[in-house]
Image 1 (cartoon, rainbow, N blue to C red):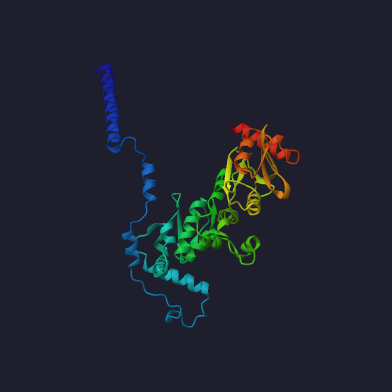
Image 2 (cartoon, rainbow, N blue to C red):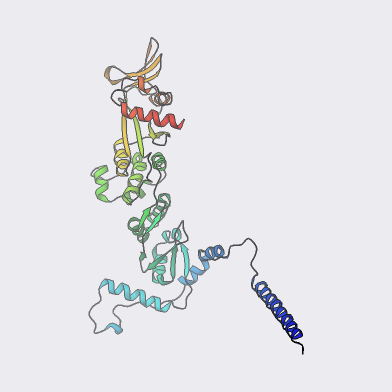
Length: 377
């Protein structure tokens, strides 16, 4: 056969082989690619991993009959008496061995905090098959008997809600976990100030329970009772004691305006608080000494500005007179009383604090307030 014909046949064979190989590759790709468009498989897997178990699954686990652990059983005869820790560890292993074939359950930490009595005790015996979900993340806490393993960060509002549930249900395990193994997420400056508004958002006993006895004695005297009016400040104190911190900002400073006297004050009893971000707050029933102690412990640069003279405009001002009584001057007219809150805020916004008699004393702070507020406006 002619060499040219042989080479030609060989070339045709190679081409066909190449085409066949390409078609096979395409077929393989088509055969394995059945993904739904615009669907992230990794996200779907993560969502599934974070799912909570149905109530029926939890009930089924609680209904599993277990042999009770007996630290005085014959199997342990002749051995030295067990310590409390040894009894705890052996009992956990004893129950875990009986549950090897059982399905694990994932429950919300809120649900765990709401359990008490016999139900909680039954759950703890089955701790090897129980995982508690973080309230804000796809993360699970492991139970080891009556202990929750690990340290976690949770927003302070969630902590208070969980703790209130645990106290009301007398769940001591959840209470101890929150007090000793949870750190509040960092809070912004303005969020911390806003928290001072809410004296009635949580029961008095909830906040008291979060504060150690020595701290309550230091801040509230021998009876260690938190006043209803001081719940908001105490809540911020609890945030600090739990290891909470304020997000680092250049604006981590506050200025509190207070009247030199309370005689003759008109209107409401709010206290003016200005944050380094330029926000003006009217905080009701503020316990200023307590609030200052807490805020300074959190790293605030806190300043108090005491006013005995509020310059409103050319014809109008408020001034402390005889016997510490506030008077309002309008031109040549003088009347008893002053709406300190409204007039001081007006003076702050109009940058007329510099015309008051107190300006030389608090010049640095007032100048800084004017700078902050003017930049904000």
